[in-house]
Image 1 (tube, rainbow, N blue to C red):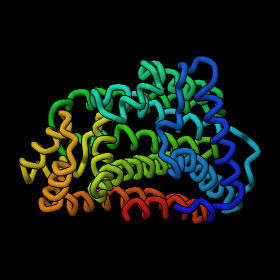
Image 2: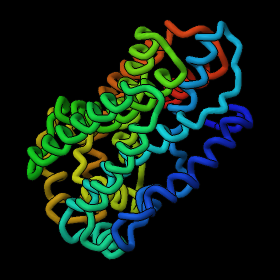
Image 3: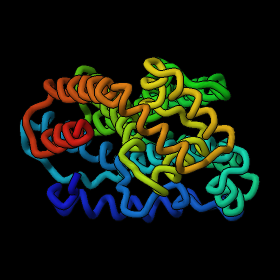
Image 4: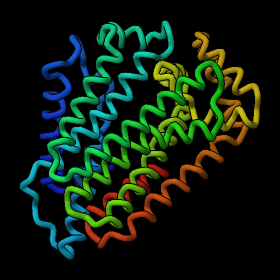
Length: 326
């Protein structure tokens, strides 16, 4: 999504958020050599802060009957940083416990030191501190609920280690990771702007479905890669202990898909094996089934916006969900 169409206020706030995120993630108590940018590819926008800001603005427009009064309160920016810190905590945790001996994991460990758990805890505490100072006490409960879901996601990820995950397990993990953080992002924006229960719940549902779809789409994008990029993309998922949604759907239809995935997981990061895996996934019809599920999630997300009054920010949220489906 092109943020240039969102107006100068949103762009300026996103720039401030980037600076605040660095200060908090690298501030007092951070593990030595910790670099949060290790977990963000160049050019990839921080979608969770954007969701907080858009949800806040869309709710304010709804509450005021369509008039968007610029906010002078920095509560939304604090919560937006908290949402991104939760996301980084997930990545730090999963990266630190990823594929033993992987090339990317070795590079990550070199930069992080042996601080995977400490780094995740540091980020989580920072997120809690930010939410505690927000103007509505419900935010603390929201972030604790999100942390519980993330912990359950970690437990699920650990339980499927050493085998191919089922499509249901992949969907559950997508909802418990990205779905939970997107839910928190959108729900928090609505709370800060004074939305009533129906608006807060509706935007929470939007975030839940959009986040699940985001996670699924990211998984499926691996099968769009070719040659060396395919090997790197597969290794990236293995390094994060992340089951692949397309692989899980393919393995239901073709046992060979699961066998190839496990060979790659067990260290045989070979280009020929990776390409054979991709071909068998495509032949199995897994991508078509995955797109159906992805489309359903994005449709549910867009449907959840119906309770909001029309506004440019509601339209931006709708376009973001539609873009995931594409």
